[in-house]
Image (cartoon, rainbow, N blue to C red):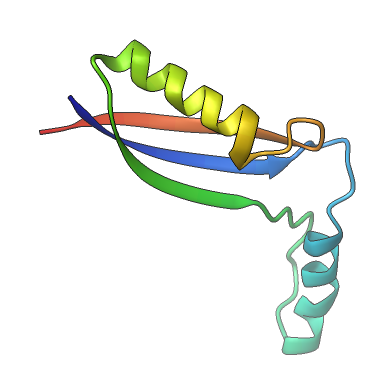
Length: 84
């Protein structure tokens, strides 16, 4: 069975996000005001083969914990849809 996963990886809320802070400071320089608390992360889309949804979730969780995210500094969420 084939699945499509969309994964979002973000820095933990209690940690500073220097990239988001830099973008936030520079918004005013290009005339954009009223934007606060920018947090920048990663969005990953992938397709995978698995016997069922549980196995697909296990693969995604393993990939996120061991390769795609730094669990000390980031958290991840994902959605998983079967592909027909």
